[in-house]
Image (cartoon, rainbow, N blue to C red; front, top):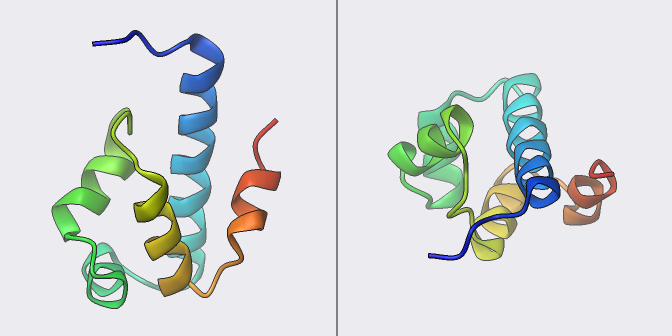
Length: 79
């Protein structure tokens, strides 16, 4: 398996943190987000609590749609 470069790990953590922050500030728990996004609750939990190295772009899109969040906003948060 290819090693993830440190700067990309930081990027993944930034996406992870932003999505969790946005979910919480939208008043949703993981179960409700799971229902709205059709992403399994365990997957959301794993992304929020550990290194989300398997976070796919499609999943980011699905979660963003469920949060009614412009995906551009997610990536603008990454430096």
